[in-house]
Length: 174
Image (cartoon, rainbow, N blue to C red; front, side, top):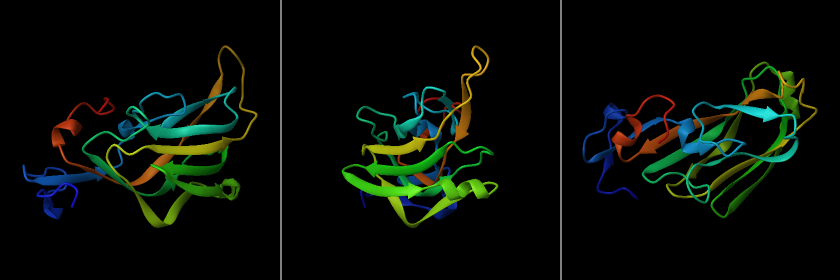
């Protein structure tokens, strides 16, 4: 309804017409990583100095908002790493805060994921913050090793109103 009179055509989700909106997977470039850098992939570098409570993922625009003409239907998170340094998460969408989830049990599984019982919608130009507790110590053998890589993959779908915003190079800023 927000994008009316545009409609959604299930047969043309990746190439909508002029009066339609489209759908794709959640694109990392819609978000910033733990260092405040716009993401090109879901992989982040956790430095040895970044332990404790951290902001892991935020919206990429001013005020940590999602870009205009994008909406995200968020259904969960995947953690495809062998080593997990994130032991607890919580998030905030706009002015709604969500409770903490303990992730330590995930260390028992090969490639764990969290699927929410109810999906979350992140509207265009709405702020988003994913917070987490980064468990240390993180390896530090300077100058060669100063941190570890951690993937936090947002599961769900991204809806777009203007397809030309997605037609750039893979990994490029939106």
